[in-house]
Length: 294
Image (cartoon, rainbow, N blue to C red; front, side, top):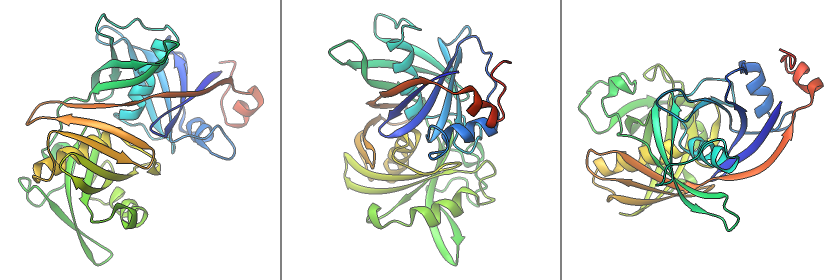
């Protein structure tokens, strides 16, 4: 089994190409691949499958714990880079390919290339945000509220909720470096009010066009970057009149540029990087519970 290691703003992935849709991805194999000491190490695993009629390819994304995920903003940029650089898909004249996800088909546009022609920067049309709490899903006391509240460890925590294809809670903080990301992130991720879990963003407004952000991702923990989380944070804070249309989102792993006007779709631009390619050892695969001869 061949693999690629890649990342988008340090949100890293094991990428498996499977255009014929022959590869099974049991949770145990995903966990073994993502293990940073006994495996390759990653925040998640991406299987690139066949696209069908509406998409060029399909992004089958799994978190490091093996759970299935609807959408991954950094992952979809990595997929676009991978299939273009390896000549698996030819973009349109405008540099666009269509990546299928469990949250719908995402048009992805190649923005910049390196001198050797490899993809450097990618822009993704993330679609419109989902704002109704029941569709996130979140059990809201007041579905029309811009901010919601839960009691966590005796503390009342306020946050916004929305979906960018996957559920997000966004907290406004004064200092993102001092934010209780691990404590509150872990608690909110599994709160019963979020029946499918939730990604938790901690956002510090620097200016109306600049945001600092840390994200606790369900099934992973804190990651260096989260593309859907960056989009969710911008939309949530725009609704609170704290941000303008175009925002530079600074994450521990780097910068993402988010553009969202009114009730339109959200555009996210950022880098995609391939780190290494190789072949998984058959004995390791067997120990991970995968029969490489299937």
